[in-house]
Length: 373
Ligand code: GLA
Image (tube, rainbow, N blue to C red; front, side):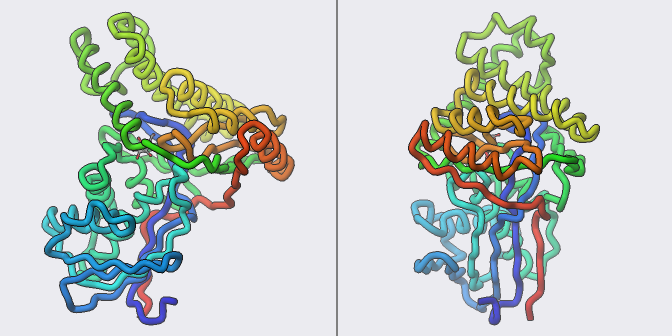
């Protein structure tokens, strides 16, 4: 497959342990890069055209490097076009090349296939232009592509994790400063299990953007009462003091963000201390908050998380990623994983009719570059 390409460049999908819908509020998140990834086999072709092909699709797409803003409506290739355009606009060289894409991050799973595609595309372009790149800049340009090209007003979590992940580590990322602490994922007798609810997504972008706008409304009102730059600046006790100034729905959204930020801090401490019971409890609390207050779970993710939580060997389970479909992350005793999968599959199928899918993924590096020839 890769015989004729010069480089193999990869970027990771991610799972978020905890800290959901906090990144665009200046909060901390706690994701980890996965061995599910997008791989780009790339070679320069001496033209002004980026030729895209896929290992899993019959489609072939060509992008003119001088007209990169014209591909927003492509079914396949729009993420690559957006990523290349933002990289070019930032003053980097974008050369014609052939790219063969091999994506093992399931699409629409909430494990950031789009970030993996955007980040690996930019890294591949930098590599064939012989340019040393800063993975954080790659992440920021990939985020810009998602926002301005794909139309999802996302935070920085997915692209940062995809670019800067480190094998065996979760990343405690402060989305206000972009400071990142790597925390070894040492779970003792436990393991993370990622499960896809398999419900097809719809209208995710507009619902996501609406949530973001609601947090901005909350911030605007709260700033009349207290000196904060972002919602994550508000402590739980300050929130209690000022929450009555917010209309009900906006108050619920803000309450989720403030308490979720606090949970991230406690979860990272629990992971460091090897306290799996506390970590599990925080996952459950996060899910409940995302369901009741932030309203981004839906029937299927609720059924999946609650089926998981009802299994004795499971310390905790929650939806991961943007929501409205996608995956859960569960903390399960290693000896109980097989029984857990059977229990969750059956219970979830009975309740929703969907067949849950389980992924075996390791915690892996972000961008990798390998020279092939
Ligand atoms: C999506 C976005 C991220 C983040 C999560 C929710 O994955 O791309 O920026 O907001 O949702 O935590």
